[in-house]
Amino acid sequence: MSTENKNQDYLVEKSSGDETLTSEASTSSITKITLSRNEVQPEYTVSIDYMEMTNPEFNRICKFVSKTYPNSCVCWIETISNGFLLDNYNKTKTKLESSNKPVNEKELFHGTRETSARAIIQTGFSAKLNKVSAYGLGSYFATGAAYSRNFAVMSKDDMAFMFVCDVITGTCGKGVANKRIDTTKFESGVNSIKAPSMYVIPNDNAIFPKYLVAFYPKAKS
Image (cartoon, rainbow, N blue to C red; front, side):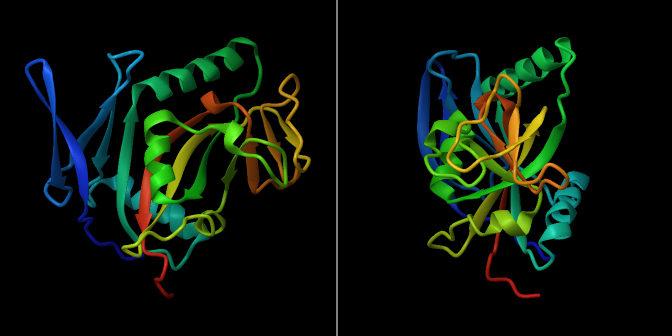
């Protein structure tokens, strides 16, 4: 799997006294960007860190992607920091644990277009946006990066994006097309009970978008 440095522009917030200044900056010279502050709870900020290629976690994620997407070409990885989403995720996990219910936390993929990815980083996933589905209504996640790659719409600069998420799958039930998952019994729907490769999550707080992987989808084996 080959890699290359990122080089694109973002709006960067810089604090100056009581003001927040916004300016364009190239990510080729910046490793951390503060994207926004939560309007309801100002103590939370949303930021991304560009993971160094020398970081052992970078190598782990690349191997994790290539395990099911052998000809992948990861260009950069963004570590997402969103305290609001993480707190809600941890509360969901704690609630299940305190009820002696299985958490079944998994690391799963979700491919999307870049504009959607930027929105998810800010506010998280939204199950209500899913209107038509094969295995129930909710946010969809795959065990295989190659499958999620099909939903990662290529941007104008020929890049594509997929999330690596921590997902609480809990007790799984067989998903039914276009039907709501019975959340009194299940935390997730799956395409197969015996060997699930797809998880449908109806609870937005059961998902934490941990990494955003940027890759070149035209790479050949």
